[in-house]
Length: 244
Image (cartoon, rainbow, N blue to C red; front, top):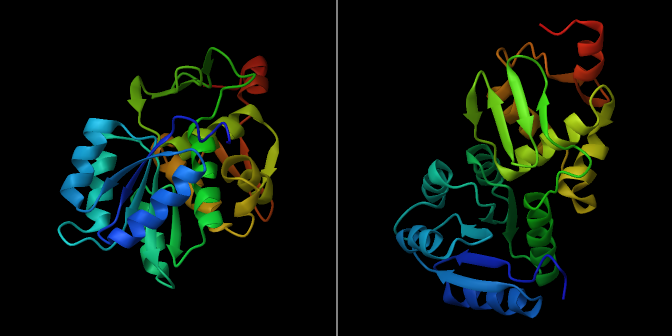
């Protein structure tokens, strides 16, 4: 049993009983605990009652649209969400990511693919601060505490989803250095996401919208065109007295 399976509770939301049973059998085989919900309202209640570590959420539900459920979840909770979408529905996948989903799996999917995606998202959510410790004062506007998982901008707490937080962690950990698109995918999403470059652009944009005064002219998360991204080298700028 993988360590990321032990005691991890997965809420499966789908109105097809056969699909729920299929998912349950495969997740339980790999050591996960499974909670079931067949309606949107039932899913919201299950999140409140059981505090799952991850939600598998079908887009097509009979009472509440899956995207509406995702919006409701994101208003109060940062639990990782993987959307289950119909094969070929690219618009659904993009919309889910834009609304705050952490990943998507297209039907039909293999048990191996499902478990791999669940594990990858859980690993991102369980990011450990590593060698970055204590409060990081980027400048007088932005403070980050990776141990407490808190980001403060202009004295206000910024809500970051788990994937956004892990992306920020790796950018700050390598402040001043360029991280390529492939490196970001491997570090934040995992090697199995090497063919999903749009994830990087999408989540860089999310971070800029939340942290930058002018996302179109960023001062923290800088683009190295054709290569990747670089977080401003705040340590060196502080030493040289350039930070305002």
